[in-house]
Image (cartoon, rainbow, N blue to C red; front, side, top):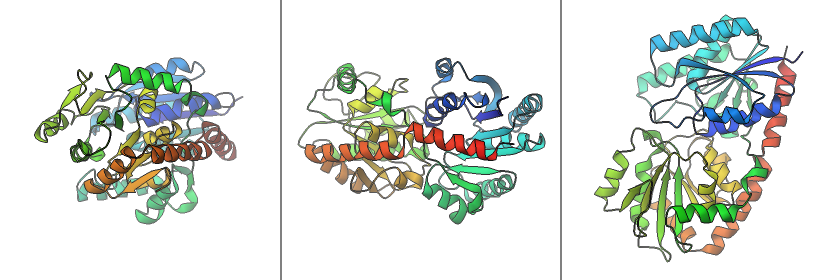
Length: 396
């Protein structure tokens, strides 16, 4: 009989957690009996539950009360729903992903006497999210949860350092580093066709340098910095530029307003003429053509765990300019596959992006190194091997 494994995700939405976890679990389903529990998406998120149809070997159950937002009634309902499922299925391992499922799911697993409780930190909320009082409460709560956690997964070595040394959430012996994995055999198929089709759809000619940001439009992502950088660069490079913001969020209306204040031309969904500088695409279900259409990826966040977009861009042979926050430093080689700049340093980011925009040879060299680096460190096969070994070693 296969060991039983319950995986608890915050929600199934377009984003790194879903894109990484479902293919991973599909690969592991030959050895483990897997049940995926997932919660409800927020209004500003793009549902990705349809991805489950690609992996028929995975069983899943929807928990409507499991939500990202804090609500004591929903959280209590989610706890009892998960508790009852655990008691019925009697899993050998419960593995939670993300902050809310990590809180509710680990408590339910502990109350149900599950032998092994694992939690993956896809990021953390220990700075730049909340005020000092609430942040202190979160740290205390995570330290308490750490005591009932058998093993915690950090997605980068820097993230482990933050968890163990900076914020003292868990002891080092409880934290294992396992990198995210990309299905490399799928990512570079028909890349020229995908690049051309995306650029044609958005009326972008071959000579235009496309700089993109991919992620939620929320305060932690600091998208306002991205448009300020765009303002600094438009008209100041050899080739014309176009900036793409791929994603959505509750600040979506504020960023176009900021573009207008900065006298940047912008459009939503479509790019009706070639003089538009900033394009808001909202969420794109098939994001691979966008990666191939880009020349450079930018990341402007105040805080990050391990951004999937940075890894995916490099797998596609694109250099990255990113703020040096969280685990970002472990996802690229500064000066070789991209550049790191300090958070909110608009001038530094504009300088590095201008350097790449004006030098096709440098873009190509960095892009080539980026593809090699990402393939060596972030393959799905390696991630599968690491998790298979983890579950085998600690299963009961």
